[in-house]
Image (cartoon, rainbow, N blue to C red):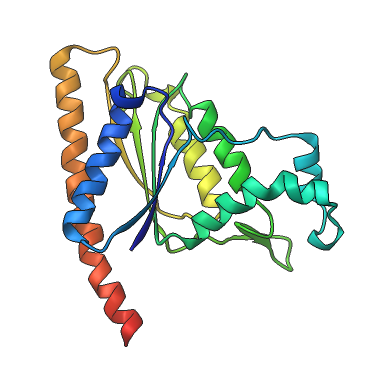
Length: 220
């Protein structure tokens, strides 16, 4: 299995989302020793800004693009290829102001690409090209946004991720959300992280059980 692992927290070693995503990778490798990981750190590998030239280039047929347009799309093309080459996807991030961090929004803008990660159909619809890839979002939230909690209605991160990645073919992503963390008592933070690790360990075991069957199916 080849896993694309994307981190988006700016906190470095102090990041809970990074720690949880590493925990999941370690758990998954215990079940799949041959696991290959392609790691992208959006906090240190800063993506180019979306410019007018980039936008015009994405809507220009490939055969008609100027050299400047091709240059503007180089980083985005490479990111899209990394997604397409992966068997499974892991995205880890904190919630910033009720939604995704700015660097991850830039990543989304770079990888939702017509002709690469989605293609138009003859009837005017679109087909996402990431279908069939196991996908996990690991998020950390300062407050409790679970159903029934006072701030539950303010979670715009989950629907935004579902919409963006659903459009490019990710139909049933898994979510493991550690909450509450920042604005909680120490015991609540400890409980939130313990719950998240338990969910991640279970999911890693599930993915690990699927992988041998997939390999046998490909070999037959």
